Length: 355
Image (cartoon, rainbow, N blue to C red; front, side, top):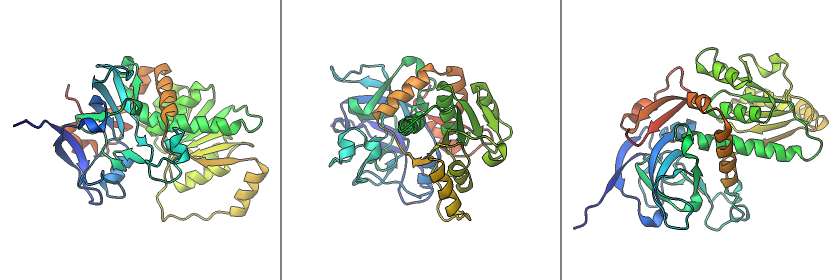
């Protein structure tokens, strides 16, 4: 009788609040992909906490559990010849996969712009995530990283979010004369700090806004060469050419839409909670947008080009600065501690592979 190998995995029962548990699952089947990967680490973010609180999350067809973990880093165990990957390679699994139809956008490799909503996402929608000891994927669903990025490679997925934001902002800027000098980032969480990093790499005067007055965030921003603000965008008087909104806080969102330079481009990456209302002078906002040639757009997820751009950005960044974004590393077995917020948390990472 064949012995069945099992892997440890961190999962939830979708729709059941606080159902997070450490599971034992069958070894990933070859039908899931040609490349076998051992998971080194997964990063945790607000999306994971929202799934744990049963706000959303969808298990694979026929499965009871959804394995969490979309931010990931792994090492290739085995890969077929001609795949472009080999044993020992450092890789990151791409989170969103194209819909099976596929729609025009997915067929063009732009599954982040899926037109029919039938895409799947590892650890979020219809596909198990990477918070398991081993997983399988096809080579085209993996991004190879320089082995020197092992300490901070788990930051790749959140970096793809802002790599896309900057790429799209620059594409919009090319509609006409475009020579940005000042950038604003709202929120000094991991995504905001990475957005600021990419702004600094572009030679812009970057201003980051957050309510926190102590802890690691102010120093991380200053050491990046950017300016840290605890006042509001309105009160600071800064008028930016490009704004990347990373909080989802309605009042902050409205500021980024209305407080900026002429011809400004605002990208919204933070997802707001619903049910909160603000008194807004829509006429004034419209007047300013029209007379100022403003653009406001939303951005979510990323395709392979954004993963590659993010990998290039991380490779050229100060590795020690990036490592400081990871403020806590927690073993998989102690997952409960990882989901408890601590005062100075920036990015919390689960170490899936034991040292």
